[in-house]
Image (tube, rainbow, N blue to C red; front, side):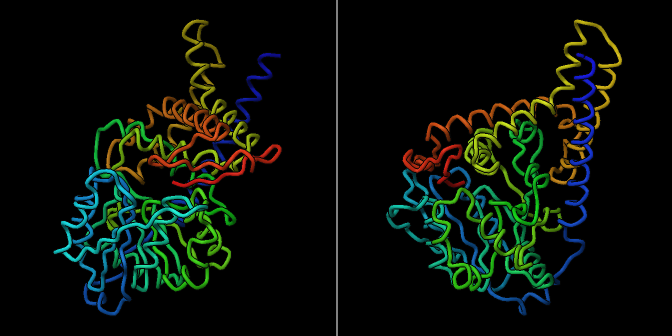
Length: 388
């Protein structure tokens, strides 16, 4: 009976590996830019762009982010940074770049019913004047030709919104080696009704966002407003998701603790905001790490065909993860293959914390609560109000 159960789990893992391989191959084939789309001589013919950066207590990364944006070769560029009631010197740092054309916007008091970041995004929409808005997180970095490439891609594809999975350009750091699987799950779980999206860098046509979709007002307490916008535009065939390349030049540097905090905020709602679906995800993570547990048990009970099969499955999932890392990291993908069981174990712990905090209504974003009041909880479902 025990052997039958083991083989049933192995069959399930084999099916999961086929599913992962299919989703990753789809992503690698469809979520990419194949060539340089805009030559320098073409830039003057492209529309204006407003780079919109919401900031709250971001002195650690603001300087490098703004220096990269200022170095852009895009000619029709506006840079708008909104300080969302920072408690540190973020506002002073932003104002120090006024000589380089950076426009400082002081965030207004947070009204009832709004999530802080969503209100900041709306404030940037109200202030920006470009034909396209490029929303950037402070820990995101771009290259001089990035904006021109994105605008040319959006116009070539005839879409209103493009979001980009950023690369890690830095090397052997804990934040890289043990990074969360946030974007990995975006590729695996992508589907037309809930397309993959990246919060760190996404561009949208201003008229479409403001006049067609109603700005951020309809999404004022959504955990990922950009995901809702992407889904709405995907239904109109007007959205694209791409994986950054060295040519496109979008990267990010995010501390390990910050990645974990973001995953805690996102995992529960991304998995449906229901306890049942999140518990199912926990079971799936346990199943994914089952081969590693079998191998550890084999160190004490002896090596059998069971351990051989477990090693084979572990190698398959490690290889699939390595293929993903090869696309999103400059180096170190092979170490990620070795660390796959530990990364899955970390994801399991983070999901447990995410479930616990959402059920207890204790999820925070930079000092502000983002979960719904208890009176809005329905039977069997947790109504989510939150943000990245």
